[in-house]
Figure (cartoon, rainbow, N blue to C red):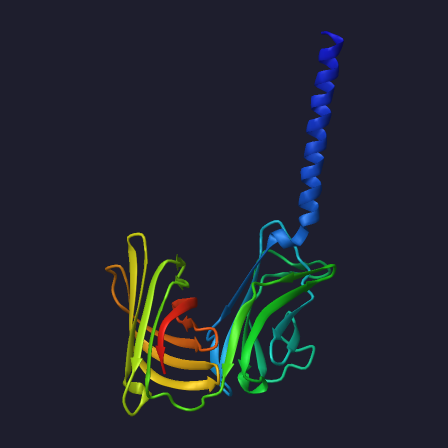
Length: 282
């Protein structure tokens, strides 16, 4: 074999070794974050002051891993800030006003090492009376000895029911609408009308389309009121139909931001942001 070929083979082997070493180092540095899958849901993202909402937080520890989760922290940032630290049994370690915690399930625990593969899950009930009105960013932190892992961040809106709206007509379009796991971001249309002596006389329709998929939410307006000078809230209930599937009962809160002329929707299945208001008379 020629000398040049020998040198070339050595270079290839050395390059392959260094590449494998680099990949191994990246895996090690990624550490527990790659072996822990977090989940976070809110039962009701719009609540009146005094009502409760339920946060469900989970951490799935994947196979072949042992994680020493020390505690968890619920964090709310908004008009007022609040944090609640609790241990892995659900016991508060800090002041947690208006909050109750229940451990739903946990994997086996190996003393001195941590949790074995499985799911760690909690139900956190929060009474909104401890918060000021407004919109909050909510997330959980999972605290490990040398690392802090965050869940997805979500929004919670706390409202005060104010003056009733008895006359209002709105039309809006575009924005982004999620129904289940499907994103509709083009052919979206909302119309609603309140007229008479009570807001409960109102009705409306939301239609969205993506390709050949289409969904329609026909609803009654149960209540409409001013939250503040720039926000009108519509509480609705009705039927949601996706394509030709059976109709399902749906409830949703429609939030009209009069200063930016945009509409958000928070529902059981429907979540929409930044629908552009093309007509408003309220």
